Image (tube, rainbow over all chains, first blue to last red; front, side, top):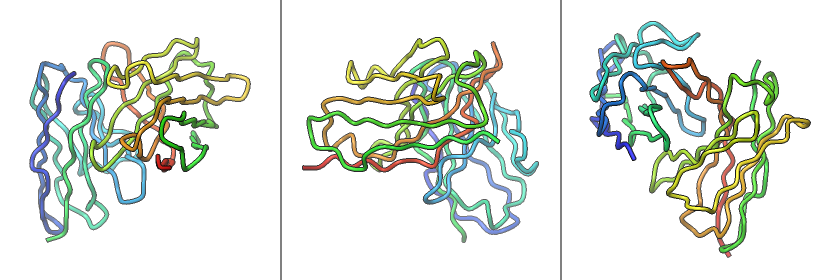
Length: 107
Length: 123
């Protein structure tokens, strides 16, 4: 299985901050990397697919980059509704696997 | 508007079979554009992909679950189902159904999810 490792596991930030979350794959997954946001009691929500394509309806302050094994999710200016847990997921091969999550908390 | 809704028992006895159904509206299970997946989330293991079924009935599942998983679909009802046999406490989780969309050769992603169904395994 392809292992996905996110860092940091948790992060404290303030409204207006720029935040970067990283995700590393244990092998080359080209650009088959997706990012999800999950709030308590809710299902994950797709933010970005194919490493850098913004899902329809997702604010432009979210962006993704990377290919191969190293990827980043950037939130350019944190808004109150962005405090949540973020997951990366590889869709290069089955079994699809997720990172362990990054919990973004208010400082 | 695409919507998915899980249904099934919230409590299953150890060694028995967990059965869940996902009802889909706003999209057809007969379409070759999508794959229909089950994903679970537990505190101990995070998010885990269980498997998917395709419009033609072909399925694929996570080898970690060995041969305990069956995923099937009923196109007449626009539903797909999960059966997980010989459950233990480790199978306690929130179970999500989700639609996987594909851009061939470029991207696969879960763009619609159900709200999730909590299933506890306990005697």
